[in-house]
Length: 314
Image (tube, rainbow, N blue to C red):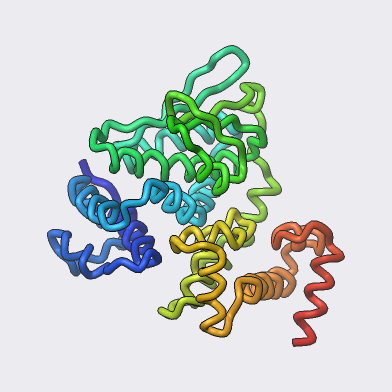
């Protein structure tokens, strides 16, 4: 079984954010110098599994899969946007998403069924080793949830097969109950609805700029890592301090202390990103003021205009 090399590159990038040695992990590859990002690069799943196992053993954190799933937000936006260009309804988009997994990551399965007035999506895998299994299911579950929300499914009932689901609730910012499987449930009436066009417009406009800013932020210092993580975790709204600090396996307090040691703060970094995005959106004349305010996470246009005024004073 082969999978695209870019899946492994994303895993290596995530490991770097967790301060692991990418060189050590690359040494596990048959060819450590291989360019995993080229379009025709494929690797066998045992190679991917070997690297993932090394990461899991070094971290030994039960929430690692959730963290990786949150890290993949930017990739989720790209995928859902691609699907939205071809799908005419949410039902069709889900079928395409299922086919995507079957084609590019066949170790995972997404099954759909109807129970009464609900559609249920159940995520499963053939992986038997418990830690690997949990990582794959948890990370993909978070990834898929972002996809469903971006499509426009507002009310999704979430279940995971664990006694403790706090890490899911904190990360996904929604109630998560204990169930037998990694499962999503939602009203079947939603299936025939159109994909949320407002959300797609935001992604269409913001995604290229996120990728551009990400490419520019290539420093190794901690503030640069935080700024890149901010962009990676966009939904397209920017994540909170607690969501980002968890990605670095730090408490909020230690996270802020480390930023201060570099003469930075989370608020300052977030405002820098917002200012760059606002300039891009205004100069291009792509969106109205109220839409820019919404895209940047401001509750009211007046709050955005106030921030804009302060930026001009700097």
